[in-house]
Length: 425
Ligand SMILES: Nc1ncnc2c1ncn2[C@@H]1O[C@H](COP(=O)(O)OP(=O)(O)OP(=O)(O)O)[C@@H](O)[C@H]1O
Ligand SMILES: [Mg+2]
Image 1: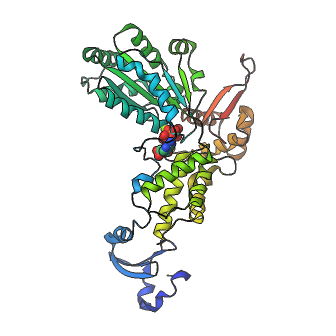
Image 2: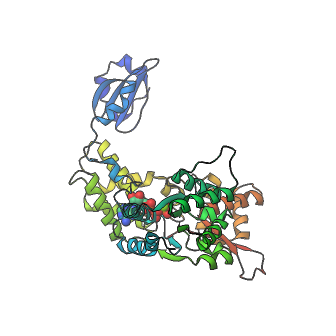
Image 3: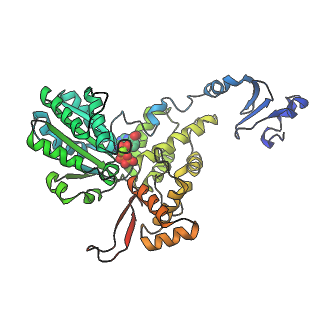
């Protein structure tokens, strides 16, 4: 095996014949030479040599951990247990809107929208936590509609939370809802239903759940508070007039974070997660800039900071540098996929996009919106594919809340459609 130039000094240490039988190379810092048919290997790490057993591999790595990262959880982008910073006004507005539920009265139907990573979920979870401290009579039910994109799916989450027994033979959707109401009426409970990523539900044509809930609120003793959350500020326009006029959603916008706000969020997390002095201001600013360029996405900014911290730590450094940030940013999938056109976090966790979906997004992202005829032409110039298949992809992207498709003319006299990207700079 060819030993990488970086490790050429090791032949002096390792017996030459041994070398030739060894294979494997992990990264610039770590080289792994393992003889065939044995569970032992030689680990060359930052110039140090050691014999290890295969199962020691991760131990060897952990050995020197914690130089920079003191509390890994606190820097991870999905960590929202600490509650949101800088969202006091939004928190107060949500609490004010939902307050009537505390006295078993009807609350307004709330619709929260704002770009990805703007703290919608973090804020909502915080409010739910506070509400639970205040009362045991309002039961919070949080539903991610990507995971549960149907009326029955949402009811199943409520059933699970309330631990209502359901007969083995199953029940029809209406019967399930009736059971839920019976249970709530019997115990004098209300539900605060949070429908996150509500686009998935609406785009599936499951909007009558709103109608059913609003009617139940009008007719019964049961109280359902409903908070719908989406990155798409326009998604309510897809609801029928009947539903919209019945619910009259109150809207609350989560504006995208400024650069300074992102720095503040990162600084706070770094102070909780990283060793003192390991994360200088230019590093925070570099990460915040990436977040800012992606609609003020705090999740992305944190993701980059976390990876940069890991990178610096694995190299045995005591501090993160802007170069670490640059390096991990260039290796993070969001940048590779759509960098030329626009920055989005479409490829961050939970958004497994196929190659064709990415191609479709790239075409739409060039101008932000595109006439369907132009879109088909461009797509078919790159790929041999039927219009029907392309329509399927559009449907999927629509359901994921990444694009929206509307008629080119309001009155619908002209046939064409306009496809619009929902999340862009
Ligand atoms: N104001 C904030 N204070 C502290 N951390 C924040 C704040 N806003 C966002 N974050 C961090 O960013 C991550 C993403 O935020 P969150 O999940 O609330 O975004 P979102 O608006 O729901 O985004 P999406 O629309 O993509 O679901 C959180 O897990 C949290 O770590
Ligand atoms: Mg969210």
